[in-house]
Structure formats: C-alpha cells, structure tokens
Image (cartoon, rainbow, N blue to C red):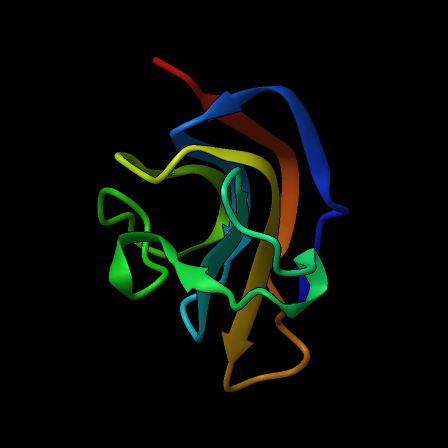
Amino acid sequence: TYITRKVSLKTPAQGLRVTADFFRPPTTDVKVLYKVLNTDVETPFDDLGWKYFNTTGAPDTTTEADARNYKEYEFTADDLNEFSAFSIKIVGQGTNAAEPIRIRDLRVIALAT
C-alpha cells in the first residue's frame, strides 16, 4: 500500500487524473483510491473515507498483466464536487509475495473547469 501526502490546491478542482507505470505480474492486481476535501465540508481530512476510481479501483481501460514490462495505467474521476485538497492510495494485491507490483512515473493532476 502506498499513500500520497495531502495535496492542498490554490484553485479548487472538480476532477482527478492519475497516470502511472506499473510492473504487474500475472498473479497481482492493483486498485487505486482517492479522497478529496470538499470546499464546503468541515470534516478533518484524516477522517474522510477513501473512494475507488471507477467504483472498483480498476483503471479506465483494461490492460493485461505483464511480467516483463512496465505498462501505463490511467484512472480518472470526473464531475466531483468542488474540492481543495486530495490524496491518492495505491493498493497492490497478489497471491505470491515474491512478485509484488512496482510503480514508477506516478503523475496526479487535479482538473478544474
């Protein structure tokens, strides 16, 4: 599990896009979650719950696992309520602890209209 720090925005946003290169052996799966601090909510950021991208944490398009190469995955959440802070959580799951997922080139963009 990897969790980013809280990212505070100067300008509120309504969407998130996460792009990353994953090395994902066939026995593994990856789920990506997010949490956002809505501009009209007084709840402390640490008390907010995590939400899955695409309702299951799956990428926008299906990409086959590949035990030899990194492949790019993209996750998007559009039409969110206006938010001023966010965090991303990446969860790797697998049946063989000797073959974990690996991540490189993580990019997160807050989208404003």
